[in-house]
Length: 170
Image 1: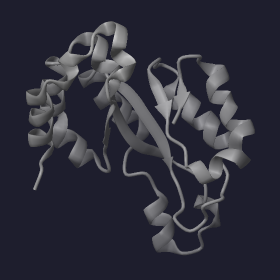
Image 2 (image 1 turned 60 degrees about the vertical axis):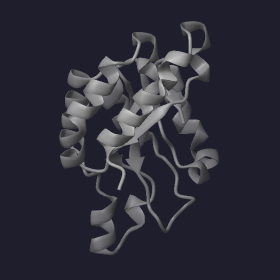
Image 3 (image 1 turned 90 degrees about the vertical axis):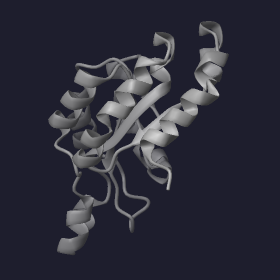
Image 4 (image 1 turned 180 degrees about the vertical axis):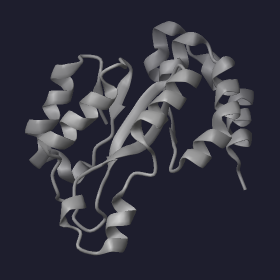
């Protein structure tokens, strides 16, 4: 088994972060840590903090801390109570944001839960507005969206770009 601690230690030993000058930082791989629960996040804080402390500051934006913090497309179509429960985020959005931003100088990668059955459900204005409210205090943010929902949702998702020019959609 590869633990997060072991994985981060191996990355550090390989010295991948030192091979890239500040002029070539876009060539440095992005490390996206996708958390599925507050327990997982809390138990990883020390390892991630240690890893970031050993990274040159200009590479901190190459580390993304990801979680689905709001309900997203497909939620309203679920009649099954079990399916609805699976669609609920495993985080309280404010708690996730507070923990991550108080501990790390990394990019927030915050998204929505999506239905596993309705791959063409759309993001709504309400969903985007709720996410903007969550993210408005932060500049380094990327919003992962489900690719199959992007085309039909583009009109409302554009509001993320218009709100903060540093925000991205991934």
